[in-house]
Structures are given as C-alpha cells and as structure tokens.
Length: 283
Ligand code: SF4
Image (cartoon, rainbow, N blue to C red; front, side):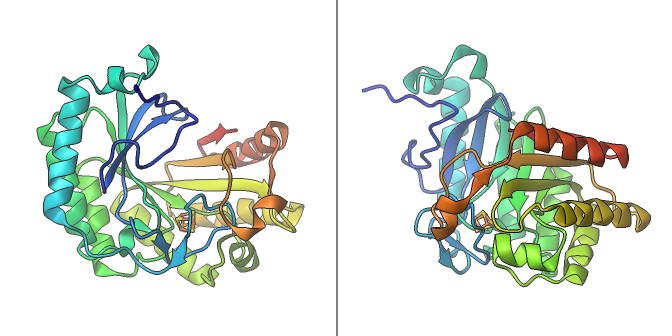
C-alpha cells in the first residue's frame, strides 16, 4: 500500500530508519529531512507542549556513526534519484528538499561527539549535492552551549552555512520553569545566546500558547525587554520565529494548553518588528 506523506503526517518511523526521517513541512513548503539523535526519547527539558511520546529525562545515547552515514547517504539518494516522492504520494508542489533539520526526540546537542556528527551530516549532504542549495538547520534548546562539543558543533554548522534555531519560550526564569520545566537562569540564557550568535547564524524559535500565566502581558513585555537588551549587548539574532501549537502534546498538561489566536500573535509580531527585528509567524 502506498503511504502518504502530508503536512499533517509527522510519523518519524515512516521511512523505517533509525536516525533519518522525512517530514513534509508546511512551514518550509517542501521536504524537510529530519535527523534524530535521540531515538531513546530523552531530553534534558520537559516542555509542556512536547510531542515526543514517552519523553524521559536524559541525554541522547551514543551515536552509531556508520549507521547514520549509511542511512543519510541512502535516503538522500532515494529522494534525489529514486521514486521517494511517488512512493509516499507527496504533492507535486512539495517535491523539493527544503532543509536538513537536526531535530530529535530530545535535545540533539546532548549526543556524544556532537560536533563530529554535524560535520558528518554536512559532508554527506554536500557530496549528495543537497547542501548548500537546501538549508541546514539545528533545532536546539541551547542549554548545553557551555560545552566544548556543542560550541564545536555550531562552528561545524557555520562551515556549512547552517543556522541554529534557539528555543526561547519565555524571557523570564518563572516562565521557563512553567513552560520548559528548566531552571535555566537569566544570566545563563544570555551567555548562551551570546555564544550561539558568536559562532553561527541564530534565530529564536518561540512557541506561543496560553497556559496559566504563560504569555501574560507581563511575559510579553519581558520578552520585548530581553530583545532590547540583546540589541544593546550586540547579541545579534537573524530572526524571531513565532509559532503556536499545531499538534497534540504528549505531556500531562496537554488538555490545558490553548493555541494562541493568529490576531494575538500578529499583534505581538508587530511589537517585535517595531524593535527592528525580522519576525516570522507560523499559526
Ligand atoms: S526541548 Fe524539545 S524535545 Fe526537549 S522537551 Fe522541549 S520540545 Fe521536547
């Protein structure tokens, strides 16, 4: 039976591979080739909107570099030279590789030898002629950027003209505790943003939703104040990307989460734009 890959089907097992999975991305307007370093569903954060099933606290397991190389090489060849798009019934206007996105079922930079993994992906995708024409993206919560291998990973990403999407769902310590279940201090957040922006192109990725005091007026003001502070400190972000929850959370808070309405997101985007930032909104 032919399987269909659509913007609503995000089954990471659809290609039957351990580390590589295809997603037809509404945001990107085509095929996003995901790389998952966390097949154990382990993360050092627990975001209330997280869509990872059976999420557990922890790090990525040791990476099988040979298998990653084999899977990615095979899959890129299958998409570029095989009948992947036909087999998975992908709409004609989505038959293009938009990006390679390191986005796991957990924090990707927690994998041992993270930098070598980024380098390997860059090499394989370049050899397959997918980079530099497609984007190379790392989606991370940025919490491990004090580590040498995380920093070296960002340097490798920069060598391939890649970019970091740095998760920031609240500009306050209380907000990050509520939304991400992390005790990340404000000082550490700013230090990590400084490290990130100094090493590679960095965008903020911010999930907006309603849950208790999340995204109250004071939370919004704190976010705008932080953006001003980052400017003053010459911590330069390429873009602010706002989005709201599109799919079911697997966390206990799921039932209480409320999507933010487009009008409220647009109004906040306008406030960010007024500060001189480039901003995108995905509803
Ligand atoms: S950082 Fe990502 S994987 Fe980790 S809990 Fe948050 S949403 Fe889930």
